[in-house]
Image (cartoon, rainbow, N blue to C red):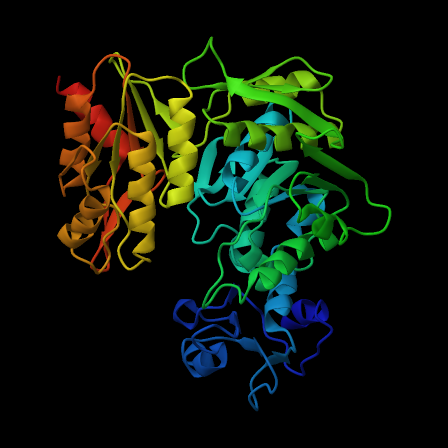
Length: 478
């Protein structure tokens, strides 16, 4: 593609017109013929890496003013927004051929996106999904994710793959960071779904305060033709206010004012570790995941489906087969007890998943958990307190220790557990084996913290580690 064609989308011109063979915003990944976008960052300014990109063969540069003398390219007041437009153009504007649906919120984006994907698939649409767990066409994984919402180059490259594979719809998790960093700039969404907003992601490199965090979430809805939101959350009004004039609005919730109103979320007595959702004007929906929070995510998916006019049979079928790797994921094991894997890694998420499991009246909950190294130690106390509140026994072990000694992290957790029945087994594989040895009829073994992750990070190295594989290994050896 000629540089002139690319620069046209950002309203720029350049006397030179080389062929552009690739886009990159990482100078280390520059190849001959690439356009290098020098982006401002939290720790460094991409302009400092322009010489390296040119040395590696960059044919052009886009950066904040001024453009270095004699270098083909353009200066842009907002290089991040410029890159989003350039990436869309370079990959042939794939979003124009797709119905895009964005899901945002502090909690529940991944689960809700999976549910919506499964509903659309049940309705007969070939559907892509992009989020924390990677990019998928249907349930076939295309690639892993470096971010919940990819940078523009990866995003539009993935959308191109999805369009070429025959997708008509794409469900995308939209993070507040993505909005702040303009990753979704220039895209128009058929619908935006808002789940909730709680204080999170506030600190260096993220958001300055809750007001900025809310504003970044709300900015998504300026790019949506329709809004679907949690009417029970006080921040929904701020989100809906950003919708274009005349855009349809659907509120869901548990109060009488909701357009799509839930009457009850309760454990499903006919299905293990499942809930059933009762919505006004419809028979019950069955969701094969435990917990009120999963019922609330299902309510969001129901509301979105109704807003799009999807058949209720597709909604019912999609929810009945909903599955999210590492999110309250039930492993089918040849034993008289249950094994659940979840990504919970702080006190609030521990409370959510463990309280959900208690609602199914297990004989005991045996939990296996550690804590991430180089993270606030307050989390360790909060996780331990939640285990004391909801579980019956704990096996304390490694999570992602990073630069901290595993033994020191385990000691913090053990101290926070106090007299609560527990033991320390630093090796996570051995800890899982120990918990499974302890489990008996009617128990639930809850493996918390790793979820979908397939590694343990220690001293800068990620070594492969799969909890699902460890559980399978345990039963294969019996």
